[in-house]
Length: 279
Image (cartoon, rainbow, N blue to C red; front, top):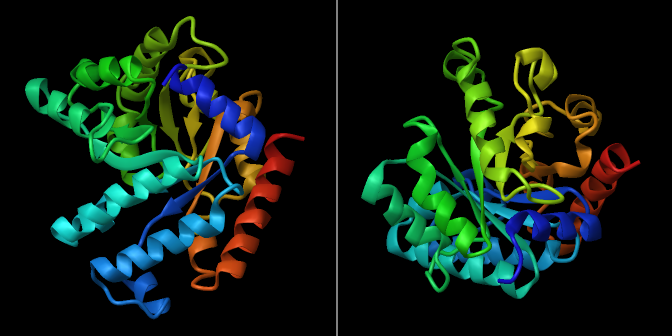
């Protein structure tokens, strides 16, 4: 890889828009699609989605947990999904939320961010709640290999407030400031992104965080089934919408297994988000 992740992400969003399709093969979705709840059903589900949404979104966000629950067979499918994203020109956001210390964090980094690793993704989600500095092995390897991270900042789940908004400045504000230090000087934005929910009760500035100063791309969950819409994203991230990648899962996957319906849903969400965020 010859360019840093932030620039690759910006190019993908400039070309295809801000939509990221979440690949969340819940057991009930497999059943709704008439598929078996095993590795074979998982593979059919995943590859059908990849084929349907290619060229209609910028990224795919597979949720690692739904592959891990099937053991070795599920992990093999996840490897195939990540390779399939690269083959189809889709950036991968592996939603693994890893976070540990020392050699263990280095092991996670090698698993998901090293060139040639079977589970290598373009980017992964990570948790900073053992201390932002504990993420350093992943930060360094991601940067060396042209990959990226998405650090949990202000998440869309209500329980997150009890940790993320504590203190003055808040935990989230301190995490974002440290992200800003790592992203300094990178254009058009950095390769260390932030997960900031589109369902926030107030704009980030009113919650005491300096999101512009972080220099981070933003992964904004909460749109669709969780209640937020494209205009909520535009209001919450006013002035930063060119940095926002919006994952949609059930709003696309619920239209399957018909590939035409999946394509139509993907196109519809892409157009709605583009109209709201890139007017």
